[in-house]
Image 1: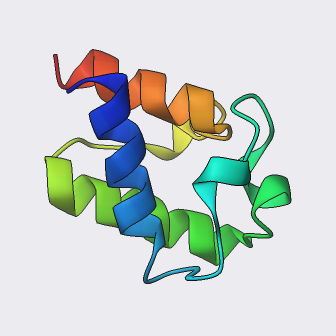
Image 2: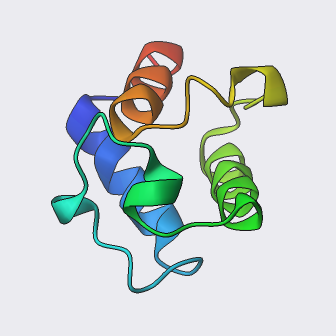
Length: 81
């Protein structure tokens, strides 16, 4: 998966959870929850949707890596290569 593919996948998975969220305005290094006004359940739902689409396990111990858009994209890209 390329970084562009990973970003598109995150956007697709986020759309039903937070339809008003716009990744194009999110700073890559900013915390997604803050940048897109997501609560903890929104993030868990996002991680679950990504798991369902990719088959990747996104364990709670890795949530720190997944907190920013850049981190999430890197995580997905590295683990689906």
